[in-house]
Length: 163
Image (cartoon, rainbow, N blue to C red; front, side, top):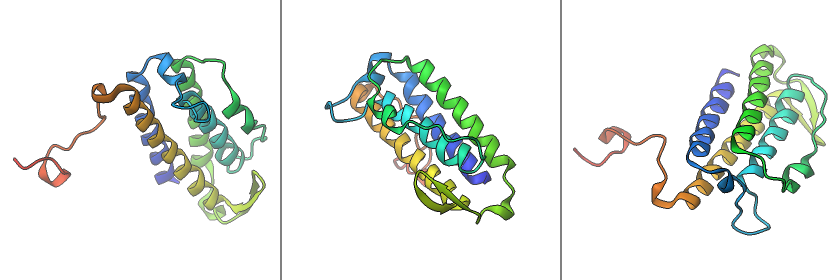
């Protein structure tokens, strides 16, 4: 569970790094009407983590409205979206920290799927990371060469050009 918690926290840092570089209008932008904006992706991540970890692992009621996550067109500010995501991940972190490891193979039914707690955690964590990278990509599309990387290699071992 520690690794899942750290992975979610690291992905949140990447998302926050992107949002810090964007204007609110960029968060609402979509390349095509059928594509998701960063806003929709963030709402989706909140819903997914709530359903799969906070509910599925932590046992809270499941009140997700998945369709609305993607249908929302009312612009929300990037600060509000990031605050929502932080609250959701804090709830998920608490659920993961409190869950007894000896119960990881317990069955769960989440979003119509039969799974185990461990599989639900793997699924939700990898899903979150995938969408975090999607947000990085959209940010790079919006900013072009003005995009600031969160991390750059500093030695040949890390992949920097030879010194």
